Amino acid sequence: MSNIIDYIKWRGDLTFSQDPFNEIDNLILSQLVYVELNNIVSDNAAHAISLLDASKNFFKQNNEQDLLDHVSMTKNAIFVLKEMAKSNRFKNAKLSRYVNDISEQEQSQFSAITIQLDDNSIYIAFSGTDATLVGWHEDFNMLYLKQTPGQEKALAYLNTFTDLSMPLRLGGHSKGGNFAIYAGMYCEKSLRDRIIAIYNNDGPGFSRDVVMSTAYQNLLPVITTIVPESSVVGRLFEHQEDYIVIKSENKGLKQHDAMSWEVLGNHFVHAITPANQSVLANQAIREWIALIPRDKRKEIVEAVFQILDAAGIETVDDFLTLKLKDIRTIIQTKKKLPHETSDSISDAAFLLIKIVIKTFTSS
Image (cartoon, rainbow, N blue to C red; front, side):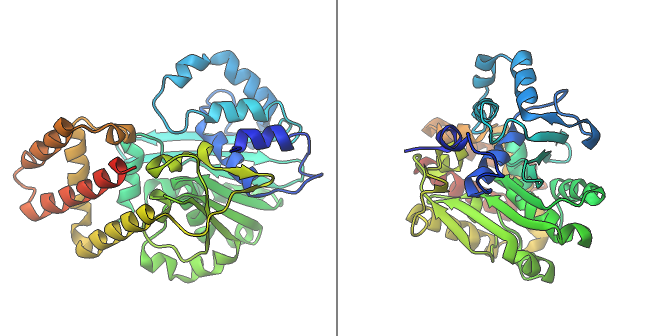
């Protein structure tokens, strides 16, 4: 089945002026922010660079094999960039305002890029969760924080666009989709009025009080959420918006990889309903959240990542290759948590880890 690379090869001869923006273009543009473009794309809007030139500079500075050796669901974004640079549809897009800010201290992972298209519109892409636990830590911090550092940065980034009058599309894959919605909710009104679409590509939702807020409800008409059949990340927390369920050539958690999403013509291959595994995983996590008092959530999340760190689990891929001895190590690590961590906190943390392990290893 075709994917976004095949789409670029098929549709790449047509500019956006000739063939309007669609849901697949959104996913393609959301992948650009996963390419490390430091010293290639400026953080200044006045120094925009064409996508074609950015691609040339990137591959001059980087060895493809070295990039492929990195363990990440997002490493194929470099090949999306390479193919885009060959196409009339994308090669003349102007890239600017690139930011790449990852802070382990803040448990924050934030990147963004501005893409000006030939139809005189702007797509702002926010980065999502990669394979590292730093990114996943911030996802789960959403359980108790009203505003995560990444969400704050997304809002501040969007609010720098008051000097422009072009139509805006916001989007992101994974957590980047959450950032796009958050920024759209709370940005300056003059900006919000210019937003014509927000795309959440398999990204987590929000707490119930946020999705019931006026700011969120007012934004619903422009939000499009897209999730693969076995989505886990994209069904975390609360969603009020309608979502499109699509097919993926992968199974289980690996469906989070945007390169696996199936494409037919100028749209994704839609499915009827989420897979049973996705529904059960989502239900298990919701039930877990309902059992945890809000004032204990921070301690529990910290305990989860203490256990994972001490057990040597650094990436999502480590879950996908868990062996019995690794699970024994996690159990032993849970018993060695600091004395100030109560049994109820460690038990709740361990229950979440068990849910995650079951979800990942049943793929």
